[in-house]
Length: 225
Image (cartoon, rainbow, N blue to C red; front, side, top):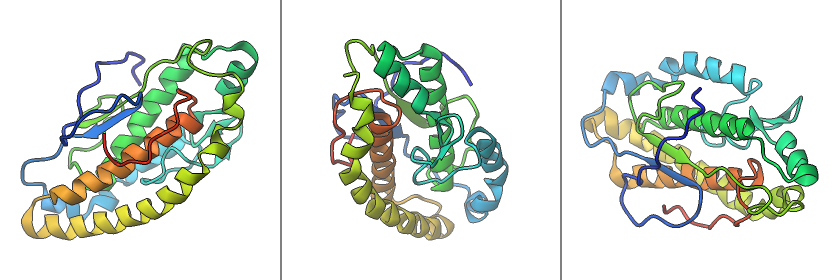
């Protein structure tokens, strides 16, 4: 995965862009989608899911890719959690290469999630962003992060977990509806697209706050950009 950080594009689904540091957007496919690829998406995705599983300790879930159960070595669904927590707590430092790993793995997981949600019929790349744009800034651990906050962020985010549980169930049913719509019309319903995109955005904001420890700003209860 690349360690460089390209400029952040504005989300393509419209609406104003908030000043919250974690941004996520998926370019709406304003074209006819591949019906065959859509119809057999779950089977087509198997190779990339297996590849992702080798990076995430065997855990992958399209709706909650950033909330995986912890694995040996302090890896949370493949994302480094405990090592940055300890470094922030005792050294007030967030190693750049740990940040790069978390950012690129989050992007890779997001591309797979978007592909499984039928929001794009281009096969997920292991390095290129394609039409899925996820970004968060590299934090100055001495200025941007209170050294004690990483110990309690996961607890403070509990209200978000509850809301996201129900939103994710809704997103699964919305994706099923979109599957039928694409098979019959070749198009992804815009309102359904925006809803699922918003659920992904919410998940990534909470993950970046509670587990990636990128910011101390509490995530908004919003699907909007």
